Length: 360
Ligand code: NAD
Ligand code: IPM
Ligand code: MN
Image (cartoon, rainbow, N blue to C red; front, side, top):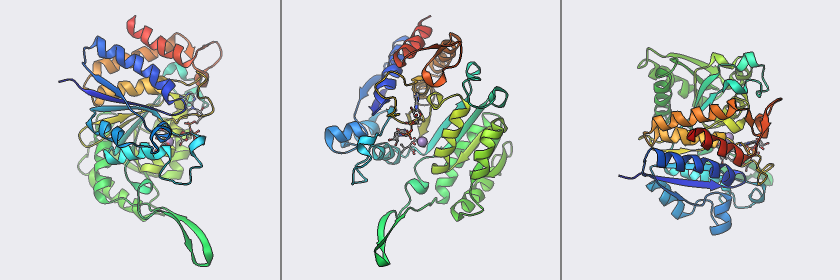
């Protein structure tokens, strides 16, 4: 039976990077006779402009019906001042994650050896880096109730959000992380703020409890402030990191820089059954949108993750990752990963080079 992939280009550099990823996906679809049916839909600012809302019903329905989703990025300054906070591009992305319960966010930070000099850290600090950040994606302070901005006595306004996780939410993301660690170097570091926040006292307790089921995995705990420091001090001490929604958001951007650029970091957001949405970890990069400067490799590597996790085409995923390595060997670099002696290319040239490497 043919499988169905929904493509959501989004805003800013989203359409540019998705165009390149689509070249790769179309080629793989033909080469491996995957018989994928690929459709596009609107999300984010593009959807607000066309329909008035960031997540039109038709898009949500198509997302539910899809076997896998590929997303570019959403957001941009033109929508940031919308007084109705529900009508923001980001709500489109958060809505898909939440409605589809894509709670398991895998963000692998892997340094391609060719990029050791593109990182702002010393090559010896990052060479051989291979970390997996497992971020809880449908709970925590992003979704906790109550939330809002209200007026208290004396007419003083206050903004408030709720950082809440129940034990089932913690357990299910914990399992994803323990299973991932088991398949890797068997070391799991759970990142929390259990010295201050009760919600993460419970988080730590559940991780400990789960650890008993995974005696082969070495479990450690770290406070998030120290984890941020350790990530830039000695990142290779980590194998798998598991953390909540907001800490994971922040730590994964920091981890991205270890790999040379946020333009290199792909992600998978999975539900209980392995259905997933795949997207680069970066945003819509309004500062470079429309200029052909964006690095499409994070999105292309997200296609590889999609093939591996949702479409059971691991061999095709391996080929894409090897093709990315080949173009880096060829010295091709977008501006964000450019270094001396390399050849700077545009978004489309980079995408075409990956396609050429796949065809070679
Ligand atoms: P950003 O990730 O868009 O950009 C941060 C910096 O990284 C910018 O200088 C940008 O040019 C650069 N950058 C990002 N991706 C790049 C790429 N592929 N190639 C080269 N350079 C790249 O973060 P921001 O500026 O904080 O956010 C911009 C908008 O994107 C906001 O509206 C934000 O809400 C949204 N956002 C969306 C997602 C998503 O859709 N998943 C993720 C993060 C931010
Ligand atoms: C990400 C982004 C999103 C997040 C925003 C755009 C809602 O930063 O995917 O990392 O905070 O999860
Ligand atoms: Mn983020």
